[in-house]
Length: 354
Image 1 (cartoon, rainbow, N blue to C red):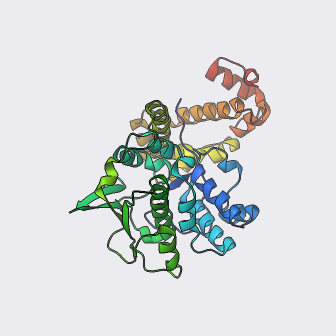
Image 2: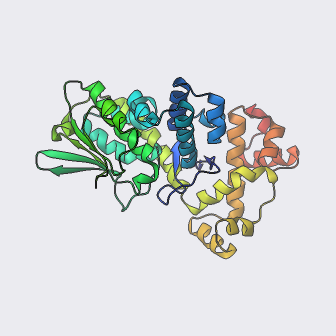
Image 3: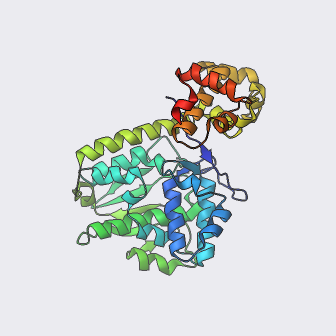
């Protein structure tokens, strides 16, 4: 079955730099931030309102939300908790495997180097970033007896909270798991020293260089070959298969088919779709959209029909809606017309799924 990722919640009032425009994060990542902020004293209802999200959005940790929502929630958390160091504390608080399938995969690897490769392979499932070149986000750069663990994402100063959270989680999690092995020697960040700069060294417990040419950790090279405490090849295989499916879904959303589906899903209930109007929203002519869909092996009418089929199954198999409600949500004005279409799609009555 072909199903693309649905991206929700482009939060009004949050401007993204070029590096983050169109980027998404996993709902599990957002939920971790929400729950941590609540634990620090923020009101859940205020956080949700300020970030323009809903609890329903966060129920499935693999759901995708816009990066704008994450930025808005982070800023709301800092404001409501009156804590500019909230991202540093957040990163230090939660182990990676508790927020994402990517973390579970990394923890199931045999050693740090294998975990590092898996982090790069599946990292987009946590959060998407622009890269300055076709390369993996994290790079290991050896220099003499030391090694740099470098984050190459574009324009990190657009949202320094991500730098704070990323390095805090890496440093503090390594310290928890390997208290006798101080792998991280220093933290270098490209942004200037913030007013809460003292929180950096207090939380990270290593020297911090602000305004650096690098966005990186200085680490001991022995880190790469450290064996993890509980490698599990069976779990590694199962989790990797799940992550591969999620990654394919995320990549599908970048195709022209995925972009069209993303536009159509929120308005399926309207029932009337003009290919020309969809093309216009994508900044294309009708003929160009036709050609690009054809190059991906599908016509607009078939795409719409398939999408209605998939969304109908999604609603009915999840026991989310009645047959009549589902008919409306996927764009049928009459339940009988929906039932005929459903039988054409599946050979069954939609009522058999209730």
